[in-house]
Length: 292
Image 1: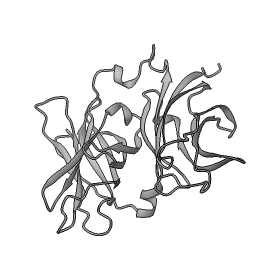
Image 2: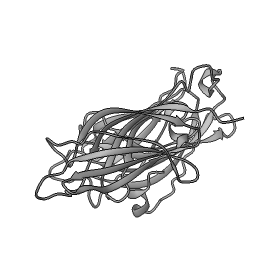
Image 3: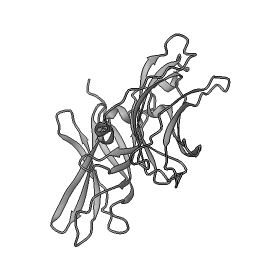
Image 4: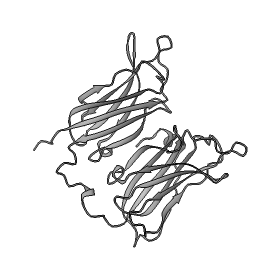
């Protein structure tokens, strides 16, 4: 029996941190979105219109593309191109595997391979994916679960303490649906050296108990001044059951984003009443460029 095909609605929102490709005529960036088959072939593709005005290194497209004939397990490939007088040049690519957008969709920032600090903001929805299907969220809440939460790096934080220097850290908290539940939260160490506006933590924590349907809230704090810079929230449907890897926007700081990875790890140990934390350092090079 052949695998059914679906239509995808792909909203190309914006990019950040592109490089200048045409010093004389100016850049005209556009995005090509392709459905990549398992054998590497292209099932279908669509292009945005080039951005010709404004900040073309941080372009805004705000354009929705429709791609037909997508099958489960096929990856989306985004190519950022620049349209010049003599043809198009490729700036970089970003990949979005199907497990990150099927069936519940994806909204977030993707790292652009080939451009160290560039990101692409997209929103992907599978048309009809949740119609008539029994997905995990249609069942009663599951037993307590464990999550592996990797807090990698923030970008674009504000300077909170002008004299002593900033020491930012992150609080990750489960927003329990039951108001009587005990607080579940973990904290990173404070970053005191290096570029504290773009701090790197590279920490992985085990968070429990967590139940399906409960979002995660990330709060950016400054330890010296005891201030909160902003918050970001990740709904459970974006990381359960397939996990999430990407960027979340930090409310309160217009340009700030946080790079995280969240993985469901199965049922909580014991009754899940206690919170256990395990920190694992990852290399800074991998954290800055790894999206998955």
